[in-house]
Image (cartoon, rainbow, N blue to C red; front, top):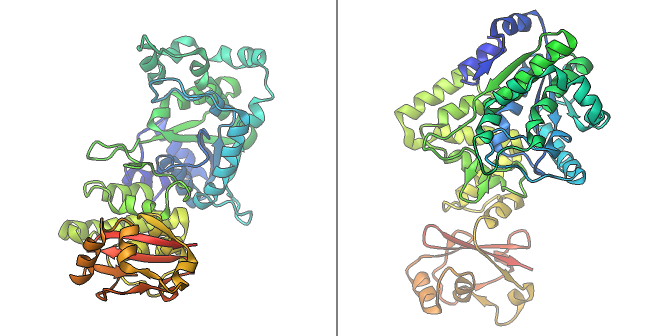
Length: 428
């Protein structure tokens, strides 16, 4: 199977310039290709993944991927898919964001020097900052007509809005992105740009500009923008965007996002985001159709995605945390797994010396302090009826006092009332 056949099977080809020519070019041997992202935040989110994973798919087939960080274009903002102008970012913020994202890209692409098609990360500010405004207008702008620019969907959508319209700053964005393609073709012999379907207009400016300025044929390939079957936006949860940075979206929540995708989407997402083979995905699809309640496809998706972004140990910690929050024991739990649990439930602080005092801390009081019960009377009822747990062990002793023996990793005591109501005491 060729890379294009693989992408077609996965449903990842939205549009392509000169598809037959590109197919022939890929048959001749490896090429360099790029995908760009504007560093508007200090972390990527799952909505960025399709083109970046697309780069890795090409790399796995022997091609050389280039990830382009828009230190220049990010200071302007891409109007594609936006109803209003973005807030402009300073160079300092953009540089900081790129440095943070650089680390995340090492999980997605292979930057090892031992391989011939090692990945590259470039910043378009490194070449755009050397071009004067007049030089850009004279040497680049003359090759692209305003007629073709206003025909692009990203521009037409904004020009039709009488209130916001589109500024000249954003209008010029496609020229800058087009020049990126030309520059990478000249500097790195880059022959292909991939991106989301909303980037089609920007990509075709790059192919046209390279043809006119360098008399070379380069290609554009767009991937579909991902939408959920229920109409909700992919990559969004009740708590906001699903980020790749675990300090913004915990590993547990990242894992749970993919475990809980709509049944109608799970096989699509296995194709879009994982590197599982056709045979394995077909097997999971068959299992899903026969017994959707087992959610094997969902767990496979969540495991593959969390392994890719956070690593196998973090994935296992997230799985362990999931089991604990469904009543599993704490035997052999890692500190990270327990931290995952604590990060998802209400917490209350507990001075360490209170555990050692003569009075100690009655479980009854701890249930009230953590909000698991509203009163001592309600706490007594929970204990009496067998609905009170310390570290997922049922406690029915009315006078039970928490002690150091209940503390895990010198910090955590997990409390539960009933089947699903959790809280954690953080010992300080």
